[in-house]
Every structure is written in C-alpha cells, then in structure tokens.
Image (cartoon, rainbow, N blue to C red; front, top):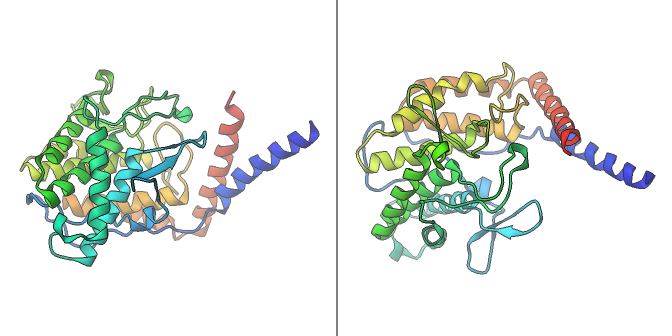
Length: 325
C-alpha cells in the first residue's frame, strides 16, 4: 500500500512539475502575407497559420490517414488532427509550388491533403458533422459530441480540396459542415448564441458552456473562408462575438484556455492564442485583434509572469486531480 501511495504521489508530482517546467515557447508561424480584407476568392491560399510545426509528429495509419490516441490508448481518427495535418500539407505543397496547386501535380503535400479530405468527406454524417467517440471528463461530456473546431477546420480542408480537384462534393461537404456549426447547442449544433444573436463556436459542447478560445478562432477561420468563397459576410457576427469576449480571457498576466476555468493556459496554448489573434487580425483586416495579440505577447517577455502562470497551472492540475472521484 505504501509503495502504491508513493507511486501515485510521484506521478502526481510529475504532472505538476511538467506544468511548471513547460516554459519553452512553441512555434506557431503566422502567414506574413497581408490580408485581402473583404475580397473574395474561389481558391483559398495558404492557411492563416503554418501548421507544419504543430503536426510534424502526426501518426498515419495504413491508409495514410492521421490517427490519435485516446486516453484509453485506443487509436481513432480525430477530425481536428486530420484537418490540421491536411492544412499543413497544403501549406507544404504551396511552398514547393507557389502557383495554385492541382491534383495532377503529384506533389506529396497535395496527395496528403486529398487523402485526409476524402476521409473527411466519406465519414461526414447526415447532420454534416463528425461525432467524437471519446468522452471529455473535464467538461462532463460523453461520447457522441460535435466540435465547432472540427467543423471549421474541416471546412477549410474541403475548400482546398475543392479548389485542387474541382470536385463539387467537397464544396457540398463544407456547406453541410457550416450548417451544423452554426446550429444552436440546444438544437444539437455547435454554437452558443448571445442576446444579440451572435454565435460563439464551441469546441466542446458542455453545460455550462466552456468557451474555448483556440477552438473558436479555428472555427472562425473556416467560416471566413467559406464566406469569402460565397461572397458573403456571415462570419462577421461570429468575429464580433469572439473579439468582444477577449477581455474575459485576459488574467492580467496571462490568458485562460477557456472561460469555465480560471486557470492560466499552458505556455503552448498562450502562444497559440497570440498567433491566432495575430492571424485573425490579418484575415479580418481588423487592428483590434492585433492590439490584443501584442498585449498578450508582452506577457511572454516577463519571466515573473511566465513563472506565475506555470505555477498557477501546476496548482490547477493538482486541484483538478484531487477533485476527481
């Protein structure tokens, strides 16, 4: 019994130490190309973030589709991981051939993009989404949920697959995905609406709502790209809602991962927040996003703030562990 207790205490201390130790800044390169503002294009270019560093360790199965490990150790195809990898490969293809890429170019990045896109298209259900087969204990969510982040990222993948192949079914899939993403939570969709009728896309549809920042911005990018493809502006209300909530994510020394927990985000997620807001400012041609991104980025240059965030994150991990039944 004593050995078991010592093992548990060591494992728990290791989790806390990891949160304190994680002070290295990850790389989330933002596309340096100026935003096209309100212009429309039927052929999306590079994704706003260069996702290649984030997806460099992706694992592929025998069909060359990305697989993720669940907490149980079981491998499954996570639509977010699949989409992130596809978008990274599209960026890689553009780096190899700056002109618009096409399916007949036989570039590795194009083949990888289309492999992931075809799996997404084939596995999309009748509601236009991809149900997750795993629970999310942190938010009390059982298997079978939809994610706005998955919907938005998949839309970005489908639009690039459509531009690359000309196949209309990819465009149809992206339109189905946006309908589910914008459907209210209470109707089985992915968006929480405020009194002004503005949607906040929920990465995880919890009750009460969690408002996860990075998932919301990834969802917004997908809606922006589809809006521009269709010469519309439905993304503007979502952008207003997310931008208006940014102050709530600011702890004064760091950012929060979500609005359900007061703990600071990990350094990786805080850095991702900065990159996503910088990219959003360029995509939307809106300096207000850039101003917040610059403010949050300044936190990372303060050793005291970095240490405080790491320590507070460590304490949160300990409290969360002890609170579990």
